[in-house]
Length: 180
Length: 180
DNA sequence: GTTTATACTGATACTAAGTATCATTAGGAT
DNA sequence: ATCCTAATGATACTTAGTATCAGTATAAAC
Image 1 (cartoon, rainbow over the protein chains, first blue to last red):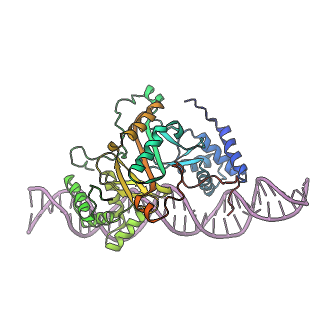
Image 2 (spheres, each protein chain N blue to C red):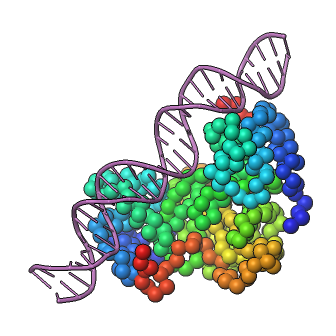
């Protein structure tokens, strides 16, 4: 849990704002509030949750600015979209290098992992593309599982299923559909 | 390009409809048209494209049925969402086993690859989760690259970039942003 | 400290994507 | 041929996100 990346909201915001200043974006009150709210979430959030939380913090900030800031941060690679269970979530990325996220399906918390620390994964993906004759360009990878803490507290280990690329909707067990 | 999976629209539709019948869904005209349109696309499509193409084929079919059928097929695991470049695309899945997709960034065509044919990839993902202390549950993996055909025809190989999990939006090269 | 140019803002109206409702229709079992 | 009800089309609605634009406040210049 205690990684080497900055995790307290205040310094995260400072880091984000330093980046904006470095690229000569203005430091506005709206941005400060929105970034603070984003940094305070300890887990992925939906745009609606962000909108709500910002409104709760400072009702004078407009909807549009929330989306503008979200989009800006996304374009700067400092926020990323996750696609868990069909719902779009956003999450802050504190690593600047090539990385992906593991999300806990119980508590919703995310962790980043640098790809460079997982050479086998990197080469597996590239190797796969090449084996199919493709020139690899990019990829999307998101891993979902039960985090160490949730394994301890809950009975998280009980219904573990094998890793499966498909979403929740499965085939009907008896070849007959569940009636509504 | 000539894989072992069924690829002509007619037999794909037959296969999809057989699945519906097996699970005691009704075989309706609307579903037939929508599935045929889906099978005729040789590449991922957006919901809007589907809606449009269905309307062009048979104007009497309602918008709602398009979405209903799309959602139904998705819940049956026979259609999947892709997240390329922030735009949601849907694609037919003809493999019933655990698989993922490679999409050509030039022509947009997708190919499926069975995970069981890529043990190293499978174990790399699971190994990664476990190394972080997570109990692996599921994952999302999409690979993008230039397909063999596009490499031949175009100068697809020229601006090849290293595989990178991030989207298109990059840092500003000189630390200064591009002005509008 | 004052001025100035303009990036950014909030309000609002809008589009786009998808869902809920409901009376009507048609699929398929009997 | 009949009947039950899953599925449909039309329509209204919600939700997510974007465009517009006059006004404001930031940061640089003076």
